[in-house]
Amino acid sequence: MLPSSSLERVSRIESFDTLSAGTDPMLKAVLYDLDDTLFAARSVPEEAARPLLTALREALEGSGELKAARIADIMDQLWDRPLDEIARLHGLSAEVLVRLGRLFAEFRLSCELKPYPDIQIIEQVPGLRLLVTTGFRRLQESKIECLGIAHYFDRIIVDALDEPERRGKQAIFRELLETYRLRPGEVVVLGDNPHSEIDAGNALGIPTVQILRGRKRAAASASFHVENLARFLRWLETRGMCPSSSPRSNGP
Image (cartoon, rainbow, N blue to C red; front, side, top):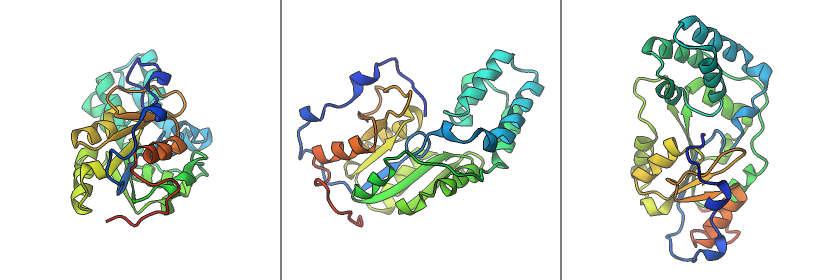
């Protein structure tokens, strides 16, 4: 969900002509991210988000900890980064973080959202479709409902920031490998955030593909980079992880 590298975007896109097919095992599952992977986080209508954004700004201004410019930066970053990451970046106190967290935890969207127009390509990708999204449970679940995309996935997991038993994406990914008896090489992580799903996949030896939507820049930590779901499917086919235009398998 955020750019973390000064690498030029075009320089990090894989050239499919240079890849050798047949070097990887067949694909059995893809671990998908949600925000800025399957829909543009900044596409949430202003009217729908205004109550939350107004309350967040008032909480930040009322804390007395931050200057106006820093508050403006935080408000802008709320579209692209998880709250816990923003708190670390700006050194927010525990008191302010708890106050902001409560506002997020109580909010849910009730508006029409649209996924990226290439969403249907997911149906052409074989194996299990596992959606793992980080955020506040009510908000993330309401996004999925508003997007109308739940039917694309075999399983949906919210890495909930507002729950004390939060495991984090790395632990969730590990549990999914164990549950479905998957080897890391049979799975691919697809997401945009190098400090979230990309780091989690790398730590477990799962191939990671960063999707570069909008203004995102490539992160050197990702194994590969694509611009959209069509390029992702082409990447899988070229590496021999799925046959061209193959029907979907049911996974293990």
